[in-house]
Image (cartoon, rainbow over all chains, first blue to last red; front, side):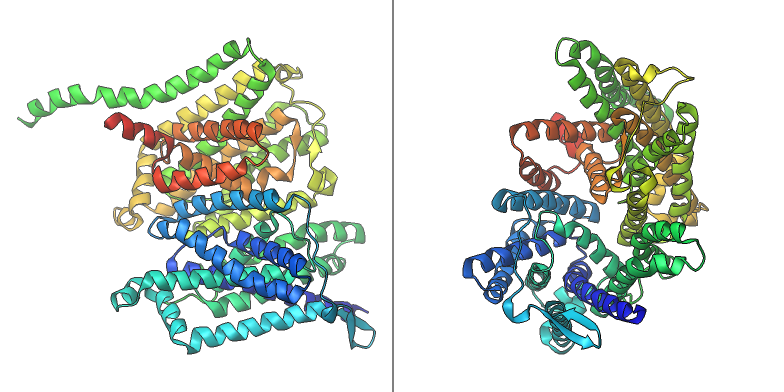
Length: 306
Length: 328
């Protein structure tokens, strides 16, 4: 019984971690390459979910909806880059935090203006609905497995892109020393745009993927943004590998913590106190983890060498 | 020779900026003091409650400006202190302690202690990592508050009464409370102003400009930054105490990261590193919110782009704009 529960929670944690990774990957690149604090990355996830929901309703197919949402979020990200973000690259972090905070306010309200305040629901596509038995007595929804598969696939794709292509090489070089890359004759502005658009699209993809299992609502990106920041700070800013490991770590710690903290505390406390304290401690776990990591490794687990 | 040259110049030039530097804050506080008289002829309760809120959040923004403007410490978890101060009132009230004295002591002392512990850890990190670790501590407190089911959990808790002053319900009277808040604001402003002007403040500003050089001069930047962090936390705890008393309600919503973001917005909107700018920023933010939300429920769609425009085109905030125009 407990092992089954543990297994299910581990899968849930993995799925959550991979979604986090999709968001954090773009964030850490934008941050690492451009030294740009983009608080508006979370709303790009939200916008992706809304696009997916809208296009799914329009075409009647989740697959087409998701496929249409990708270029839409890409275009949307590039639009934001041209309108606002490129004017902020040479500003200090405080200005960037403020301006992107303004964009959060605008877009959270903007989706309410366009689609209404009520959450949108996206049906799970027929081909991926239902559950399959992955262990005796253990059913797991196919769609969640599909998310895990898609997440791992994108992670592998990113690995190849970043480590074995020319653009990836420039991105890595940019994360280490952007002015030097620029001095070597690379159009750094265009590189920034590519990285930015790609990051926005990844976040939008994450939003589209979770649309059928979460409700699509204004502000849905806000908490994930904070978690994505926790991920990239633990992983080390600018490091895709760090983001991947930290995302899985956060996903698992958060999910398993919420599932098992009360049970574990029952060993040392009486049941009433244990469930009370467990519920209090569980959501704090990842922040405690982050504070501890930063205490011992002030630039994260996998700092990019400069 | 140098003396004779210096004396007339400093006599002629100095008084004006000094006067101007104090004129604006004095005028600001005078305006706050006169609001109840003017409001008497209008919707009194409404105006008073908004301006009281302006002053309370102005106090919180002021405390943030001390570390943000003068220490360049971008704390993204400052609302945690607001929440700590408010919960000190709420929790003590729930246990029957309705007297303001002990509540205030716990609110300010608890905030200072939390600032001391988290500051000692946070200040090990620099730059963006500092932003994120302060955010993490803020989030920890936020989730702790949401899980306190004995004290309302997510929903928060309603206070039975405002704090008592030696057994009397003095604070229930709107005007008394208004001037109490104003008194706290002025006293905190004076405290921050004298801190900034003191040797401690100069070291803090030196650390902002160049920590390595300050260290070479024999100062330990960490101690000064931590000192400022604790003072800022304690002052914000005071603001939390006042906020709980104004709304007679305490909830985790006081310490969301969005609220921390709003405090930063207030400070930068008014003018970073000016102290009274933070109060002006809080006033601008809250009054704008009030006016715009009267026009349309989608006021954030106007406010968000305005914020972006302020960052892009109005460096130095409202005070910077005012200065720039008077110079032309």
